Amino acid sequence: MRDREELDEDLPKAIVDSNAKENPLTVAVIDIDDFKDVNERLGHPVGDKVLRVVADTVHGAVEGKGEVYRVGGGDEIFVLLPNSSRPEAEAVLERVRLSVAALNILGLGREITLSVGAAMFPAAGRDKDSLLKAADHAQRAATGC
Image 1: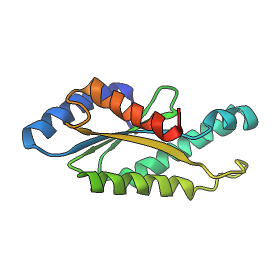
Image 2 (image 1 turned 120 degrees about the horizontal axis):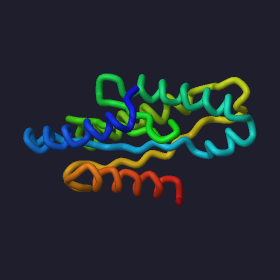
Image 3 (image 1 turned 60 degrees about the vertical axis):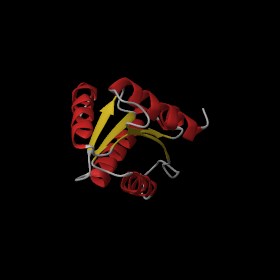
Image 4 (image 1 turned 45 degrees about the horizontal axis):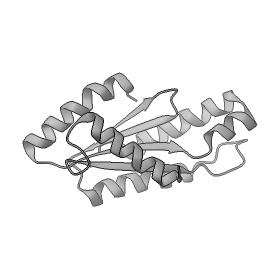
C-alpha cells in the first residue's frame, strides 16, 4: 500500500507516460460510506480495523491493474489505473466495490459500501491537481454531497 507522498510523485509520472504513449489513465477516489458512524458507534479500534480490511481488499481487487494509495487519516483511498480504457477501469472499480461489499467484519453489523469517483486523463484534466479535483468531485457527487 502506498501513501500520499508516493501518489504526489507517481501521478505526474503517470500523466507524462500516458501522454507520451497516448494510453488511457484513470484516477479514482474511494470513500467508505458513513465511516464516521462506525467510529462513533463502535469506537476507533473497530474503525481502524475496517480501514485496514477495506484498504487490503481494495489493494487485492486492483492488483496487477494499478496502484492503491491510502491518504489522509487512511480513510481516503486513491487508485491509479494506467493503460485502462474506460470499460476496463469501470470493471476494476466494480470489482473493488463488490469485493468490499462481500466483506463480513465481525461486530460491524452492516454491509460496507463505497462511493467511488473517477476521472480520466486527458478529458477530465491534464495535470495532477485537475485530475485529483475531478475525481474528488465525481466521488462527492456519488455520495450526494
